[in-house]
Image (cartoon, rainbow over all chains, first blue to last red; front, side, top):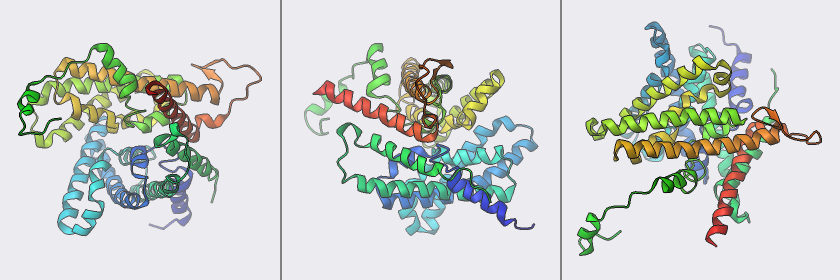
Length: 195
Length: 217
């Protein structure tokens, strides 16, 4: 299999910048708003999401093949979400046993990731875009990188926002959304990039 | 809450919480416990599909249906589900209703199905539904769970319609597809793009905060 670098770059840049999962596709917003108050938990969440998303994207690729083999593609939602929930559970148990320091750093975010729409979103998008196995793994990984990037940008800004004189009605969530809007506008600048 | 071991504890344990009236419940779902503006759940579909009133309403209706259905079913089977595996069981119930909704929308309107996209399938991870199942339907009667589903679904749909209306009006100059703005008004397309979604939601929450503050002042 030849490595088409331009194809890889297009997919990667597309997932990270042009169609950023949070700022352009609106996936993974609940943890985005919830965790991005400080940089440290954001780093933990970004790493956990990257790990789970890549794994989930890959596993659901095979689940979809299985569903099509048995002629029940409409069971996609049920099958995917059950597999993802089970996967997250296994990852949590495995990390707890095998890598306790990593578990204590990332563990608290793992149960939250099951209902992170970015995970199911990436699984469904992989099927929709009819990615082969390599594209699936690459897309899942880079989409998670994009999520992490947006999360870290947001956390950096919000940490400074804490010290700014925000109007009373806007304190907390509203100003965070305004910041997200500005980030979304800036990421719009990436659209139309070609290689 | 009284501490256990004090004389008040047994009396407090016997006290029954007053059941809210339907009106109070509706006010709860629409305002005080609004799933999007207060509880901050279900943000992804809120921002993604509110590009017009029609899309917002359709997504709200679909979520409403799934919420009502899953609340009722979970309330019916709550006594048969072992506590340790209750969350996966709830998820399967919710996923079933989402599949039904997905197929129903795909069959009835191709255009709407394309507009709502993957967010129909993502209703299954909408934290509102799992949250209400865990917090309410797993501990209450079928009728109360159904009512909770209706009330929360109503609050969710209202926000979607209002946000959809705001974005459609300012972004394209129409309401429900009908042009309502004067010729001189130049709509700003950014309102139906992601940035406009974030900004619109920020305005709604800030507006709610301002009204709440004025009320309690």
